[in-house]
Amino acid sequence: MRRITVSERPGWKTLIENQGCGWHSLDDICSWNETVAYVLTSQEVEELKERAEEVHQMYLKAVAHVVSEALWQRLGISADSVDILRSSYERGEWSLTGRFDFMMDAAGEMKLIEYNPDAALTLVETMVIQHEWRKAHMPGMKQWNDLRQSLVEAWRGSGFQHVHCAWRPRHIEVAGTAHLMADIIREAGLKATLMALHCLGWNPHTQAFVDMDDQEVECCWKVYPWDWMLAERFAPHVRGARCRFVEPAWRHLLSSKAMLAVLWELFPDHPALLPCFEADELRSGSWVSKPIFGREGHNIVIRRESVVLQQTGGEFTGQRQIHQRMAESPRFDGYVPQFGVWMVADKAVALGMREELNHIIEGHSLFTPHVVE
Image (cartoon, rainbow, N blue to C red; front, side, top):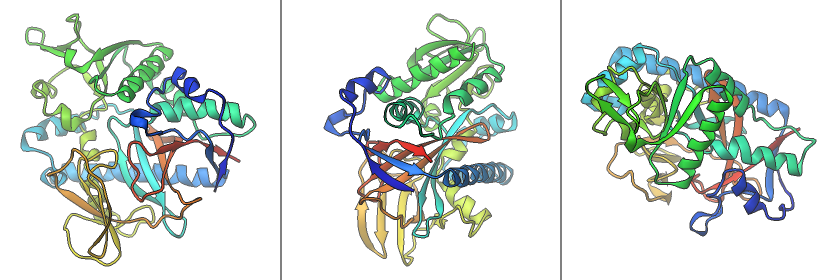
């Protein structure tokens, strides 16, 4: 793999805004890398695909272990949420997407950093923006990007007829993600309705979730994580409702970063995993501490021995933390790349990359397109 530079397209900001990415320069911080790309070999892509699919199967075994052994507290699951998650898992509720984040170690081995199995972002950049960038800059090159067609096929086979796409209108990227998914659902031949999440209601007479027109919601695809959903007033109705949520409630178990410690316990020394523990003990080397339900690189601390190398602020203070060995990733022109592998059902279908000069990849880190030779 190598990192290359190219010339920017004239008027690129307007171009990608018209393609659905209006958040490329929020707060004067650019999060789209117009003039850089990573070039991977087809063998590297195939190895990354195989690794992601293997880790996916490991996660499914780990969540079965958590449910059978009732390790709810270990994952940070509150007692009043257990029945909701367990019944969702036992019903085998349908799941659509997730995104694994990998980094290279010093030997070039791909190591799992974390999993985003619920309300994952960068869908727009991965599916649309880098695809259009490749067509403009390198039309003769390939890209690992089967995300759109994979989602269309998955929705066609879902059995649903009408999907409500719900989100909390608090961020332009979340809204853009919801609008893109609604387009995908319509392309699959299903009806899609966009709806602010606060318009989702419960009709006690019909015992059903309803939209703003009091129409029953058959399926609710949401850009809203379950740790927030379970705190909503309607949460007690989820277990017995006919409505199916995508992602389903059982995916909240996978969202807990304590699963990284469970994985290490179940699959010790697996080449895809980094050592990870729940106990905060002094260990040799560099370690990353992160909250079990954190997102976007918030509230992370990196220590070498007892010295803090880097830390970030954020809104996830006061949570339990896990402690994962740091992947001493090689740098490319000074940057550390992160490999976001998108899963649709059981298949790895696309790659979206971010890079950062610091050790921690955050929500505003540069999304950098890739091509495959």
